[in-house]
Image (cartoon, rainbow, N blue to C red; front, side, top):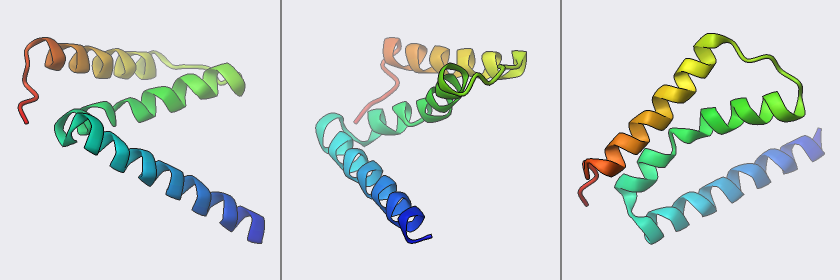
Length: 80
């Protein structure tokens, strides 16, 4: 059980480090925009490594997230 707590703590610590670095490097608005990719990346990772099947709704959600990010970047809706 101690190993599990260690891995969870390390995972949270690493995530927070990269989150803070991203805010400093590209700004809070763009960082919050890209955080929407986390579920998409998790879904694709589960599909690749765990042989999970993707439902049409999951694919539609991933397409919606990616389309939203692309539109936001193209339309310059991310003012700092």
